[in-house]
Amino acid sequence: MGTFGELLQSADWKNEKHAPVMEAPATAKVDDPVTITALVGKEIAHPNTTEHHIVWIELHFKPDSEKFSHQLSVNRFTAHGESAKGANEGAAYTEPACRTTVKLKESGTLYATSYCNIHGLWESEQRIEVK
Figure: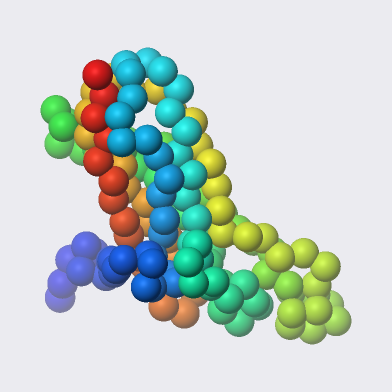
């Protein structure tokens, strides 16, 4: 039996439609608001259908001085074209994109994880220096 971490897949988001993309500054000032955007399908569109879609994106921050990460946000995408008329006949399709604003006290690593209902868990990370 493996660990949960072994389920996480990662890849360059420019070549893999499932990898979450984070857009955040490389540096920030202590206690200044930092906006982090996360999405799936920036370079290569990910399907958003009843049968194949991104269910959620989570953002975490792991400060350099701490052992554990802090969960910044949980973003669920719940409309994928479902309808009483049938699959992909619905009036709404939620796009897998979110934005979170946070104030940081120290440098660390931002993590984004996403879940595709067919292709499982994906992750990406980005370093942020806080001065």
